[in-house]
Length: 447
Image (cartoon, rainbow, N blue to C red; front, side, top):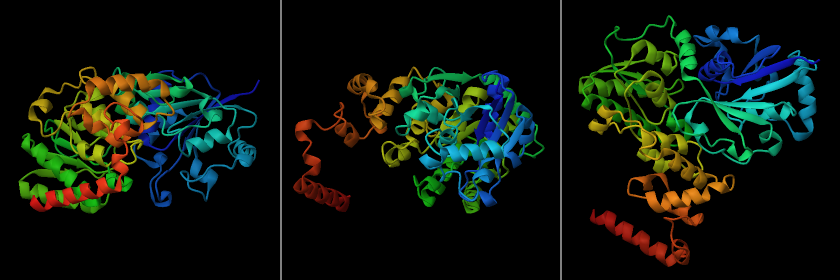
């Protein structure tokens, strides 16, 4: 009888921790061998640290029998840009089975972000292998980015995800009838506790609980300009100070330019704040456990929800209104994470809401909102959501909820809130467009 080998693909330490928690919770069946396949997806992997070299990885290493590198297997190609040609999949499967000593083993895959490489490539190479998808972030609550090859999608057995928003159901891969299964939060917390034993020193003695600012490097995604992202960090700093927090820790994105931290330090000195830049490669969750910040401030980072759901920390967001406006196209996969955080997490400038910390998904009818936005993003993949989207838009559109939708998108899908069909010619009429431009120019001149 053939052996069973489970291959777990991971590109981040957070992903490895999620897999470790799933294994500890017996979310995977028995196997003769478990292989962790690490992929360094950085733009320049040659000069960027891989997951298996990061502080804390060795504490998770024991869950796996071997650790292999996807980058080495497909060298000199980049993990994000390479996938096998259709006629070469059998050849590459033979190559990998020989390289990794798999022989005739029955292979099972566990991958993240199945819509893109390297997950897609791995699923294509091992054509007959059953697939489990694990998701550690808020994107799992959103729709699949685009139509997936049925030869891959029909092999997916389930979506494993952290219960970051209790009660909210993921949309990811439901078009294939895939069910969602949660990784227990308490087990995940124990795994993170293992990582918290790192010897890296943190600022501020125990008992001095600073506010923690989370950077995301959004300009790298072409969502904001570098100057706008710097201003976003300054808004976080000023908002925390306005709430009475004079000790501030800024955790920049690992690949963000160092000059952003210097500019923030200059602003903190001008405002009289005590700022420390935490530029060591630690998970935000490790910082939560060791530092217990008095407030966690971010834009739409998944770490905002882990702070509140797993650690009970106060959270606040800022900048989501700008991102909801800037995200293009409407189908941008970041739209659901931004929507969830904007609808659920209190605005940094709303002192009363930050103090109350009532993150109740049912109060904002979050499931209906996510399903409606998900349908507007990918209506061809989720046609069954249309009646629900129409009901939500007829009853819930308001000056506040309009921020989650675009009139042009609603018009294109003939949804409530869009321009009526008989007036649809207006946006395309050159005379009307010319008059609108003149009116905006006149308004700007008078203003």
